[in-house]
Amino acid sequence: MKKIIVIAGPTASGKTSLAVALAKQLNCSIISADSRQFYKELSIGTAKPSEEEMEGIPHYFIDSHSVEHPLSAGQFEKQALERVKNLFESDDTIIIVGGSGMFINALIYGTDQLPHNPEIRDFWNQELEEKGIEFLQEKLKTVDLAYYNEADIKNPVRLIRALEIFEITGQPFSQLRKQNVKTPRFPTYYFVINHPREELYNRINQRVEIMIANGLIDEVKNNIQHRSLQTLNTVGYKEVFEYLDGEISKERAIALIQQNTRRYAKRQLTWFRKEDSAHWISPTTTENMVKDIISTLQ
Image (cartoon, rainbow, N blue to C red):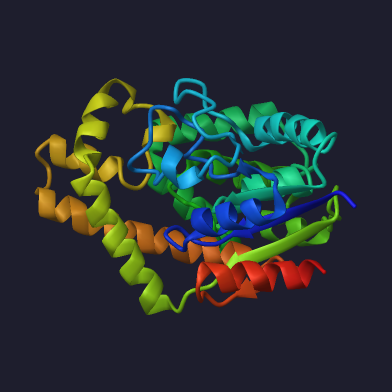
């Protein structure tokens, strides 16, 4: 039986090492659903797995695109679905790994079929340009507090989409999404790595220190020409830009990256808790986690 295994979890939870170990056991490929690891220009700040960490397992949608041509969830759905169909011609299992719940769901369930209105979207884009992202954040907070509390509110695309849907339908996006129940395209087994909060936060803090030691600041410098792009308005890059502009110290930039990454991890976990079919994995050794997943599959 053809099946998809999702290995999800917040940033720094150990998804890559678990997915690679599982792929070696099942002799299958990995599709990355990490919305920042698509981009070949961004490696250190996205914790992109190295060739050594991939251990010879084929990985798709890593270094597959440029920040100059950002990949939407809808585009990812189309391209990844084509890859899944090709892999299923020879393989029975595919592993999807990532922390971007929206991109995982785009492939597993399809992107939402809620209405679109270009004129309303253009209006909110104009509001963004004239009044700033904080104005959109406050508007969303007023009309859809539930989505405000779980969304990446620093991403204007998400804000505008939610405001667009509310204006078209008169109903909050968070409410409509619950009504729009979907079934997986393929037999799917969904696993989420779940560290105790303090342990996860320690892992995040250590990862940020490793990123700095590995050259994150130079990576950001090398992308200075892309700083206006939305793909660079993300944790780990925007804080270093502030440091390079002389607005904050290096120590403050590191502390902010750690803090903002912890907040991002909290939002990721909020998203994954909505996945009713998910199996939550308490981290032990990689070997034991692989055994637990395989026993669940059987």
